[in-house]
Length: 445
Ligand SMILES: [Zn+2]
Image 1 (tube, helix red, strand yellow):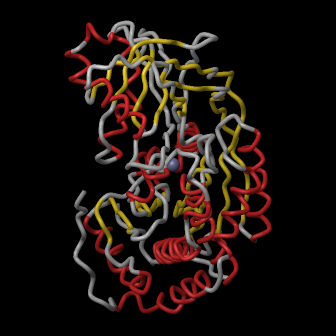
Image 2 (cartoon, protein in one colour):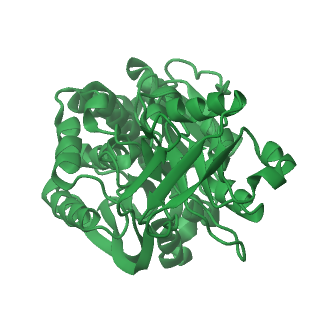
């Protein structure tokens, strides 16, 4: 995907002169050691994966609140939110016809389970929605495998999200979805499935690209592939969770807010290091660096560690509702939920006037290799409040190929990320947020 890169600003816009020294200090302090990476390791090692409704998530939230207070952030609090509780249970998928082959699989989040003993059926392999519709008669009573090769996440994820609904309408018993990501090492990718109103929900699971290709090759050769899928998955009543909020209070205009954050929940595989423990850590670190260096910008910097991004977006929805009356006080919102893998970039969405200021600020990030601002900022969690307040949005965008290789898999762990990548993201976000929070006039809408 070719990104639009806005023309670089002149190398030293003079209006930035009052900010150069502080920006340099933030960058220096961030890159001095691996503090932020170690904090990410502490989060992921101590609490593990953090699915909504789990004790792990609530323990991580309690820790984050206490640790933010110790960092010297202000107004640290939790804002309660009811979240869904989906439980995976035991699960398996196997090819039954000789040779017997147990597959690497992960049930999709929100999926219903199978009857005890599982569902046993022949597989219909398709590579698109058009193909399954054109073979509707063959789908009935079968397990449908959506084997669409990965192109981009936004193009391919539709089979994970909508495959079960489409196949159920055609009378299929269950669906298997080729892992939504580039070829991995026998790595299935979980993620949420959506059912349709009035359409019977059928079990849905991800399988690895290797197993999907194997079934496709056998089917193409005319071999009947018989699979047994067994899943104990179930949804329990909602439970209480919370967004974690902490601030660097503005010295002159505390009511105007520069909003930064990532989501603290994750899927229940791996440890949610890239998705999105690191987004929490780098935005939080931006504020910690300011507190440590005694930097008090004109406006308030507010960090929100969002709950339940993955399977409900309840944290974002609750924040937008709770702060609706102050939506227009949000002058800027940044989300880090695309990893921090190099080469990374900063994406921006906003007016031309705001873009030209942000582009100038980018010139302070030259030594980090992040001076080019690309088109397209935003994120699932900041979206509702930023839209309500018409606030310009930014996203920290890690290299998508590295990110999606491990996205929602058991391989999303801290050792894939380097401490330099974490420090760099924290430094860039700190500088961007600090200047936007401190400029005399608020960033234009
Ligand atoms: Zn995420």
